[in-house]
Image (tube, rainbow, N blue to C red; front, side, top):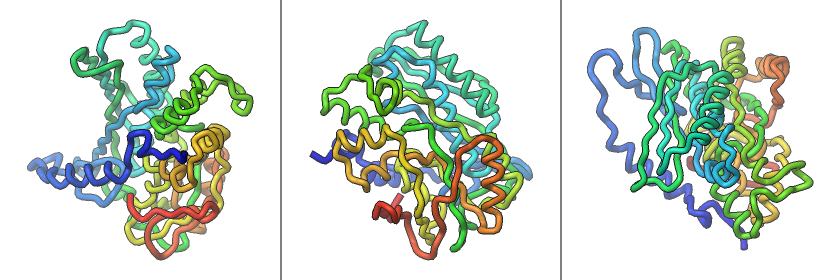
Length: 341
């Protein structure tokens, strides 16, 4: 049996269709200060604020929480919550400023709350954001277990917003290494383990730890590194490789082909999931990050400078591909391509 994300309960195509039906109704914008800025694609929404633009985005940790719950280890998922939001904001050139969290739970748990707080504080430190509030909702009739999500506020000069519209044929794609599975595709990962009757506390020699500990490895936060690059060179586009995998590149420009020619070697966890689930390459690269957590698109003459900045900041980065005329995104090494986000 070849497992897919849809088999596990998450159909990416149906998700896209549902989003289309949702956003077509979201047309109202306030009058006066705070008017919505109409931008193509992007990873955050913006409102006008004088010569600046304020960016907002929201996201959660997803079913990674179920792994944390099973292991009673909740001290890193707060990092994931901040990461998923702060990393989205920097994709549009906005510096994250403040963060609020939302926890919905069926029954209060002091130890869980304490550990989540530790992770949120560490994530805020890594992203350099202020934790300014949140909500702790007790919903026994609605929630089984708990959910953790957050919203992040950032700012950028309106003239410096990065949308991807400047991505041009010949531009270089620089990939930044992920720390592992991050916070996407966990529904499929959990399904693979379930089908194979593997417990989260089972040790894997290739990992050097249990599979549960590997799945809980926190999402990398790229804020400081990306901001340094943005301030130093002319960045044309940034892609956060999260849900949808390589499909995220399509959000940058509808009339460009983003060709990944020299991808990162995926971490062992992806190889293990591929083997146990008999997962096809096309499914792998539209579900998981496969070793690349972020990508920066820059003009050819500035690629080396960008790499030097990232290397000096101790980030594993390399040229993974180029931008071409055409549409969509492809991984030429593995023969997979996608035409729709």
